[in-house]
Length: 48
Image (tube, rainbow, N blue to C red; front, side, top):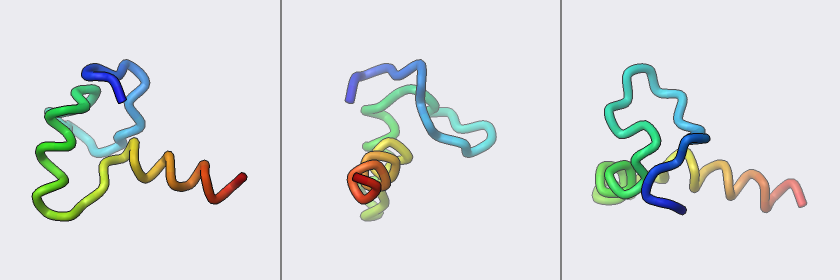
């Protein structure tokens, strides 16, 4: 994942970390949550 992602899959309205990968991970990982990017990657692997 890059630091800034123009194609960020996050669909949370008003997300202040939209497109900011490191900030997003730092926000979600302490709570054992996956980011939208991680969830999307898992879905793509299952679909294969």
